[in-house]
Length: 103
Image (cartoon, rainbow, N blue to C red; front, side, top):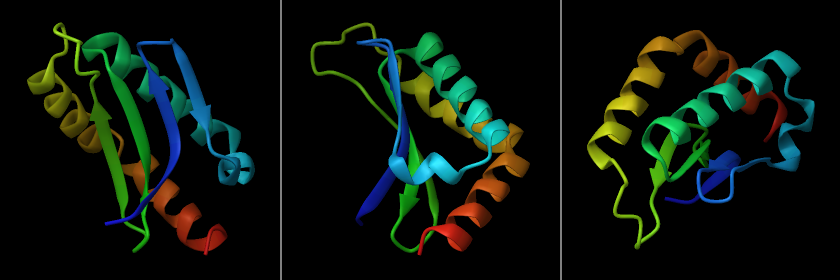
């Protein structure tokens, strides 16, 4: 299924990225997304990404470099579930924003 990444951050180059469609995203939501992503990569490493499939459903994903032997895949899965559980309002707001402003 095709998807559109609106935010990503990496523990490898210690940078984060917002897609240009996120320009009209409210600042507090952008700050919350950034905090979540940075916390994730500091805790488990790798690359954290957040975005939407083309059916408007949200995804939160991670990946690791092939040569990253310190990656914590089990921890990454647990952290994503924790993010979804603890940030339901943020996810709901983000999904509504995407549906309204990014057709």
